[in-house]
Image 1 (cartoon, helix red, strand yellow):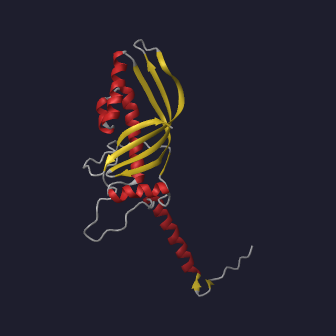
Image 2: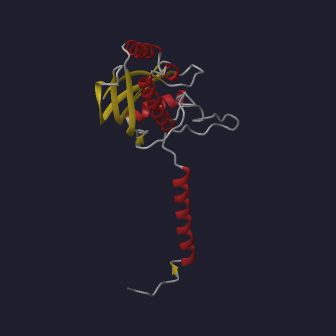
Image 3: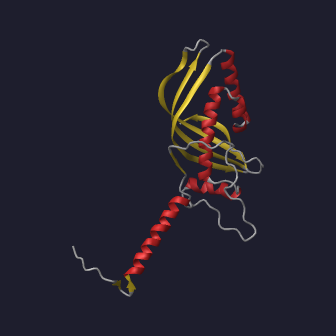
Length: 225
């Protein structure tokens, strides 16, 4: 090993090189703590016209634990460009915050449907989806059955597609989760389902009219992925 350390590099003292390295390290550490831009941000607005970009509610759902992988598309991709169309129309739409809200809404809707909690479901569902869910809950109650669902983990939640038609925006999210689903009869005996943990893939479509003052993105369609 050569122990003869030079005191300068070209015309620059070695001390400046060391300080520059420390500065770069601190900047990288700050970025890891404070977060970084993902490419969907709007260009800066003129002074006095700054809007509350990304500050409004995405889904009317309470915050909860967020394990698992969540990602947003590259803004330069075809899907990223479609998301950018929504960003340009809606100053409150922010894809990373949206996927966090979608994750929270998924938990509330899945557990709310199992529990027959109409009050929790109604604000998060479109009118048609709510009527469908409500009819299933009513039939379950009439049969004196109860459904038990446990979300063990949400493995991933990723934006699958997006579309803007006129003022109506739609974003499809693919959820992969580990769940226990079991339907019990009046005596507590299993009717459908199992106690075993099952991996389930769902494709949920969230919609919102961008002209509406209501910032809630509601579940408008759901299917297995």
